[in-house]
Length: 99
Image (cartoon, rainbow, N blue to C red; front, side, top):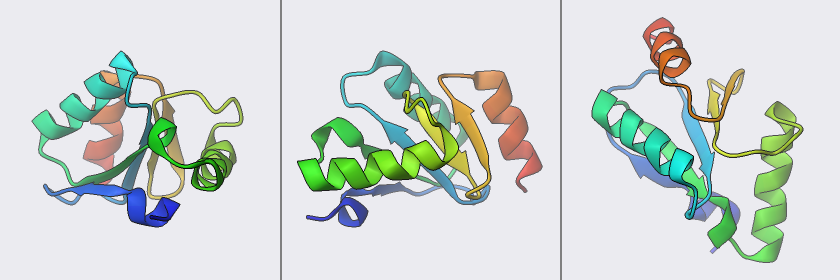
C-alpha cells in the first residue's frame, strides 16, 4: 500500500480540502480527530508512524512543505493554511471561513 492509498477519509460536511497528518500514539492527534468528528466535517488523515519507510518519507516531505519542524498533528486546509498542534479555536475559525 502506497502513502496515497494509506490516507483514510472521514465523511462529513465539506469545509474544504482538509488533510490531517497524525501519529497513532499521539494524544493531541487523537484529540484533533475527535474534534473534527464532533464538528461533523469531511477530512482525510494518515497516521504517519504506521507507514512503511518510503511512504513515511513521502508523507514527511509533504508535511515539511507546510510545517518545516514536522511536528504532529499537522492539519493542512485547502493546501494553503496549516494548523500545527491541537488548537480548537483556530480550527473552528479556519473551518467556518472555509465554507
